[in-house]
Amino acid sequence: MRGTGAIVLVFLFISITIFSRMLEEVLSGSPIPSSISRPATSQHKSEPKLPRPMLKLPSIIHYVLTEDQINSREVFVIGDVHGCYDEQRKLVDLATESAKARNNKDVLIIYVGDLLNKGPESVKSLRMAMEMKSLCVRGNHEESAMLALQKYRQAMNEHYGSDPHEPVIIPEQYQWTLELTQDEIDWIMEMPMSISIPSYNICIVHAGIVPGVPLREQHLPNLLRMRDVIPLDEYEQHPNSNSNSPSHSPIYSASFKYTKFSQSWALVYSTMAATQKEHTLPMIIFGHDAPRRLQRFPFAVGLDSGCVYGGELSGVFLSNVSNVIKVAAARQYVKPSGLPGDM
Image (cartoon, rainbow, N blue to C red; front, side, top):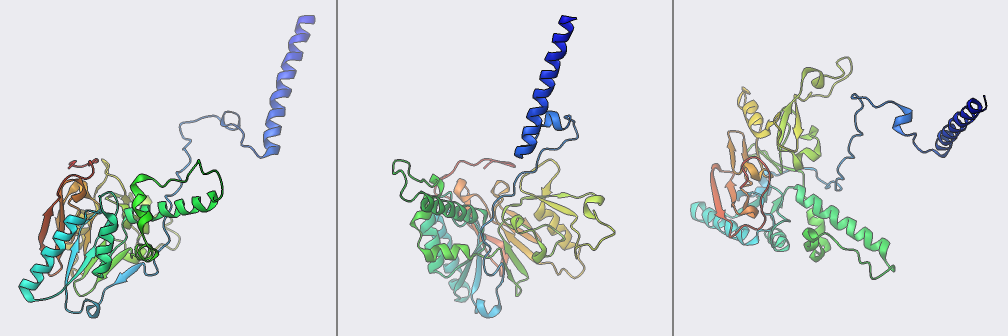
């Protein structure tokens, strides 16, 4: 009996201890361990990832370039420069000479984004674009560079007067941003998310758009980072069939990566545009997708031919989009990675 009593006392002590710890966690606001609060099951999903931070939006998100602003100039669109200044200079010179020789016109240069970062001379590339009064849509690298600079400045302010032996350091890939003037930073911050040119029925974005969704209803991060689309099933297209739905229910979801379920958004969009009776959808000119290199579809043209990876820098006149003008990269500045077709 004495042994049995001892066992009972030990059991009571353990039970009281566990209960006390659980009560303490509840009162302190700490989460109860999952092993206590619920059994682990295969149906339990992990917490969703926090959304990627996004830079403050420009004052004009979707810019419309009018005929008056073009002012009889030829419009030449250039793919992802990534700070490859020498190649940028050569391609702009080629375009300028071509326009003069053909019809004695000046040239308006528009960049598809990712004008900056990765390559050797981002500051020179930026200053050249600004001096020529060029236009540029925001790319994911402009966004990431400005976010890094903002984070650095905030850290410097918080670190002011503290230990000098622990300096605040901006990542090496964004060191060039420390050379920028405030006017140059403002110019980058004001890059629009898209440039539409009604006189050519052309729209320029950095990465892409989800087919079937009007431009002003696009999820803005997709314009910076998408590469593919994934078809949605019937339920995902109409999750709330009894409630008011958006003006255009998407039939595709954007994918930032290549997957076995995804396909080129540009191919899907161009096919959709070609089947329209009035052909009212604009041609989309974009960059971002260097692994696929130059892409040419009837209603979509991808100009990122991987200059920074040792490929080419490409551009087109809007008056003749089928004629791509190229300049070979002087060398490979960054080792490429990714699918499909590593360059």
